Amino acid sequence: MTKKITIAIDGYAACGKSTLAKALAQALNYTFIDSGAMYRAVAFYCLEKQFVDNQGVIQKKQLEKFLSEIEIEMTPDQRIFLNKQDITDAIRTPRVANVVSQVATIKSVRSKLVELQHAMGKNGGIVMDGRDIGTVVFPDAELKIFVTASTEVRTARRLAELNATGAHVAANEVTKNLLERDYLDSTRLESPLKQAANAIVLDTTYLSREEQLQWALERVRLLITN
Ligand code: DC
Image (cartoon, rainbow, N blue to C red; front, side, top):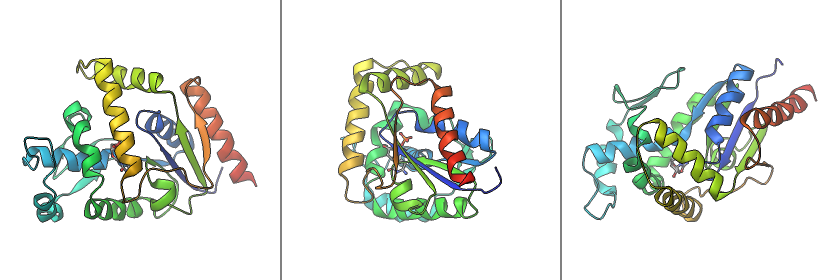
């Protein structure tokens, strides 16, 4: 496999996008970028700076004033730094999950992050996952995958991830957050989550990680050898 392509993976929250993207990048020796982590970094910044009112609403004007001060760096070993601070674990908390979709509706935030994403993917050989990768960030990506899974399976997967970090959250709270985020992500004005016309759907409900990876590798093989 010599030709290096661009692979865009989109879908609803907790469908297994990042897990698949990471495994695929590793198998192909490509760069993996979790674009959701970048939106989470900005959400974390808002919480740290207290740009959130007591109703949990992000103070957009304040954030926009400081946007140019936000520096995000992602390392090949999947760590994410915000202004040199390692926030890899801190962005996975329910506190961040509760406000991140609001942050992702802000046009100026999206422009800043999309610019970074373009720079990261300019040479191809990249697997990026998110909500608007196949539609907005890399509309010319050679392979676009739209991942889905049942709400039950998504809740169980997100719960397992949270438990692994030591956070204990009730299953119904996790489901509520996932559905709220899906609603905000797919109804916002700026780059809403939607399936790109030429994306292939992958339903991961009944597939193991290995089966998902093999399915995707087969798609890549077909593209590269044709
Ligand atoms: O993939 P995730 O759950 O870590 O994403 C966090 C939030 O960021 C999600 O609610 C939607 C938003 N997001 C986005 O709007 N565009 C992307 N490309 C990636 C994530």
